[in-house]
Length: 443
Image (cartoon, rainbow, N blue to C red; front, side, top):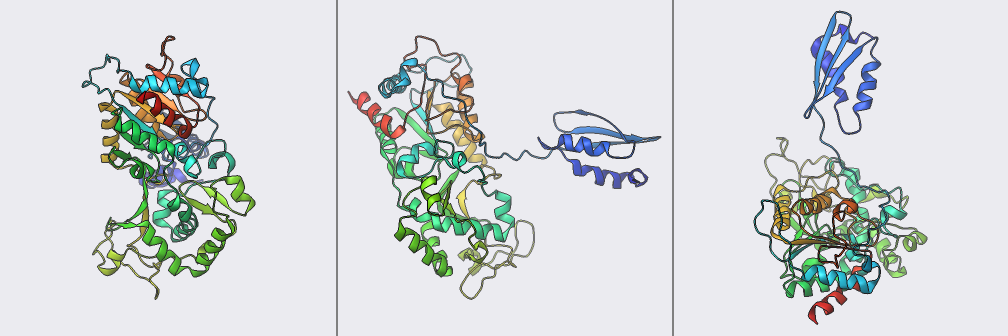
């Protein structure tokens, strides 16, 4: 081992490989110790890790800048739900408590914020769409519950890997039909009614199914994680219809189109229930895609952005000369470096746009209370909004089957005499409970 005989710059290049993330600091330290008789002295700072590596008379100070954290989906079991108030442990009790919550006046807050409105902002997750026939994530029959090996595609994979895109679009091609024919369920329609009753200010949804927009176009909906109804070009940023794209995929992949037709005829795609699909050789995953074990995904083809194909941009984001090439039938070719179409959703590892984050925060700040429906809050982008509401002194409600991340802290200071006006937590099906809440309010 002759590492320390190299120049200081070369040493720096060698050990900067140990850049910090939340998970690789111990590995970096072990790496230092493997250097011959090297001694490490270092300490953590808020923005960097400083280390002094020394051997004999030679000592080198190195600053390791931390890498951005890569958030991965939380797949562990949530704690059992905390029922608040105690009477909300039955459907009737939940209906009464939610009615109190939605119709109560917001308490004064001690924080120095602008005056709060008397309306409720909703935050919805996959659980609200289960009654529409879609899979959820962490429920009893959710993808993460029954499919322990499931790993979603990450943004960097999609952007950089042609084969990963083939696999993604093949699975999306199979799953799109069922998603496209699904409709809003009674829970979405109850949200519409509550909005018309003047009880709701806005809906923030984690879902990408567009059901809220369909059910209540006049009640504003902020789609936190985007939407599957459109595609967006990674080069020119124009949007295109996902439904039209489905027809293009069928034209480029006739064998896959025949298989899809057979699957539809057999009823294999009539359900999103993971166990039922597994019996028919399929695995269901979030966001409307279908996994077919051992399928020849490498044969799948997808089209290029029509705008970039017709008029290629001069440069890519990396400053390279843009190239968009297709085969004789219009399928994107791998020697291209532009014109890639992506679903208009936020993938894992992709950042939510700053304007969307600000709009979500503003929706919290302008409301008097927040009601979570069908979400375990496992996703940080959703959990932080409820945390923000808590810090503002806003009453919090959660209607979700099963536990929710951090719920014990959200209800820790709710007074014993509360009937729902100060906070509510119930574990019931939204499609059964919300329509009854609407009836209660109208009485």
